[in-house]
Image (cartoon, rainbow, N blue to C red; front, top):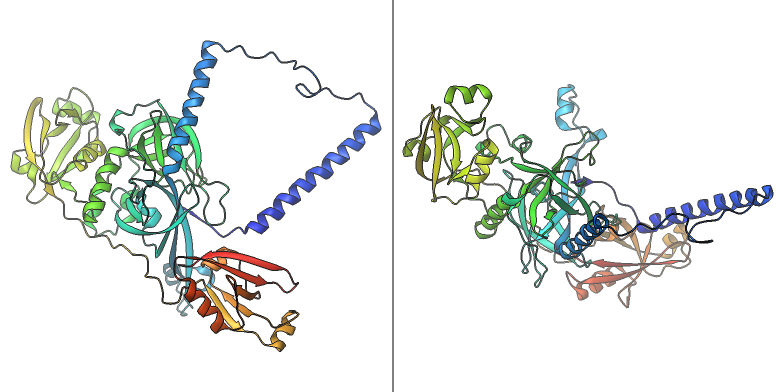
Length: 518
């Protein structure tokens, strides 16, 4: 996730122009010095004459590289339309000096701070799952958001509803009211191989900072089955759901940065094999260690969230631990792999089927289990009520058990829905009638229009550049002379529609803001 303030478009343009001007001045100075020294002109290959560097002969290796490049281009063109930009707005509480409440208590500060509710803007990436508007992203992107806005690659914007979240896998599903959207295809992440090429598609920019939207980076799969011990830290100590977190990530060196959360990790066949979720970094930005939730697990979670609004987690009912060399020696294992059964839950399906402590689970339905996270992911991809064949080692002997999976009792996760649209569409503007005296004091030539007294932070008007002290002259093609006129004009346009605001600045210039009403 990425946080940050707004960067106004006009401000960015000024910076860009200033840089270009500086370069022009530097180039002029260099040219003057160059002419004064009267040195012979420099020949530039490709501009002033034939190139001195030999052209590369298209050998087999070059053709293979060009083919890989073409594959990247085709994959990016195919997948990018199904990637969306997600913006969320939350309300946070901050006090004097922005010190956290627990820190003030720890410091023994007994003075009651003045707490205020402030809006916070965050962002991430999502993947369109179906043409009717279901979108997959990370839980940490949308959890706790009062408002979720989705931008498509063609720049259409929608307000989204949070369908369901699953903190145990850090996945969530949201939905927009749209149809015929370009959906991505989830592939078989079990077939992904260490060393194969992958692309990561994401959206590091958000809000007004759209210069990094929908970027594509390349790399390889560095490893599979990586545990991070990160998801469980988000739970309260007394929350049993922490025991069901699944950390069996695909690792990649494709560049993943803040804002890429929820974006796809794509194979050369154009299939989504992972959902980019986390990075290991000492700087907060990419250092070559990115991690993605495998697509097979994401598919199972998304299906449950869409059908039931929650994840129905299958329960084997065992407490397990990783296998080390000493364990392998004690239990007579052929390799240092598997999951050691240390204990059983109450009414454990595994214990009922005949499994015991000290058993080592080595396979599920004939597929080898290498580690704890691998076993958790394989079981999580099944449904409660399914019967699985568990293969175990018991002190050198192999045994199979048919276990009927139960359903885990997870604590329900609260989902904050987007608020209903207000009766009067709220652009975040506080307006005041403008009289002649106030107009003169503010430098306006006349008192036409309505004064913008205040603009709510991160509101639709604020994000379009409207500022306090401007004068609202017209709403659409309707001139406004009072606050009542302005309210009536907004009501006439209606919620969800784009309203064109014509404003005046004190220097006589006009400013147009086309704002979509919530």
